Length: 477
Ligand code: GDP
Image (cartoon, rainbow, N blue to C red; front, side, top):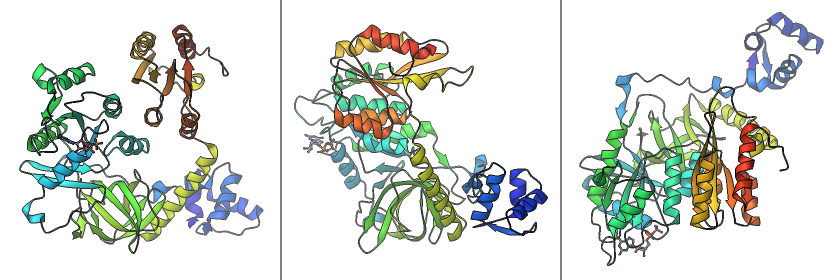
């Protein structure tokens, strides 16, 4: 943990002689080639108005520089899919059905392991499925900066149609700009009505190709395993449009999708590789955790030596438990890994003390970059559909050339944790209309630093938003 005096001088833009003089003043004799320990460097940096961490001990110096990938280094990679939809519409059943029906002969020897993600091979290509269905996991990851999902399969039960969580899932996927493939499930059931699902989703902007739109629909029965091949084919078709590529020939990177403490094996984590290749014995840093790959296993329980893009692998060798969403990066060696992890831990502590900046109506204008259009993101929850529509329409009309008012999600009923997650991930403010605040939800909102405002008169709401947009709103309104 040292820095050379001459390097430090360069980074601070001062003469080495000045540093030496200052050190002398502090009672430390030093030469230009001297290595300074962190404490001395901090004191010295402070004398010049710097923070040592920012100049001499930044993690960027230890991380391998990101390489520019030449076009011919990019190879196709498999799409990563998350299944979303309303409760009981068949997300888990669909995940299981796909897993069971697509274990190919070569892998049949393996025993399915639940590591948080699995891959299937089809005649047309591979697909990776994340094992935690639903939009909470998806948005929690996204909030932490990890967008690992390429395509969302939206499951809608044909006998039930579009429900609250279906709408939420659509909002979450749209906010993340991830394309949706619709699986109309339970078509085996009496009373199933796929046409109604198509109509209801069209109202949400997911217009089927058959009706001149762009959304791919597939009819399936997770129970009877029908339509699964077609669904996978549609996913791969959508993936082709996305032209998913990555360079496998460089040090590996990826994201943690699941992590836990395993009795006997210690902390393990499933990492989905996004680019490069990871190998046994690689040193890595992963959020504030570091380690060395002791062993890695596939979702079939097979031990492997290396893993490339879009491969989910369970890794042993973390020093403590990582967190889902953490970025996993291979670094030069153990020392570097430890160093970066400790820098991050320090920064994390500082941040916890400082608190995350909150988006509020009052602060909205202040954060606006000069001469640039800005989005005011809102999530609206109202008592009934009628007032939701009225509020959404009234808010939409407030947009100006400089400030675009976006209602990122609208729904009826109480504000849920999912609304708060979405707000936090999209820097949005939540508007409650004709509904009452709940203590529990307020706590979650406080934790996530999300602002919730309640109204019961539309003009009061629009006036305040207008005031905020013109910078008139004073705190405490
Ligand atoms: P999830 O909450 O979305 O994960 O839904 P589940 O996968 O747990 O399924 C909810 C219920 O619907 C279970 O009782 C399943 O057996 C049933 N189910 C799922 N898919 C089908 C299907 O294709 N046809 C029929 N008839 N039932 C299904």
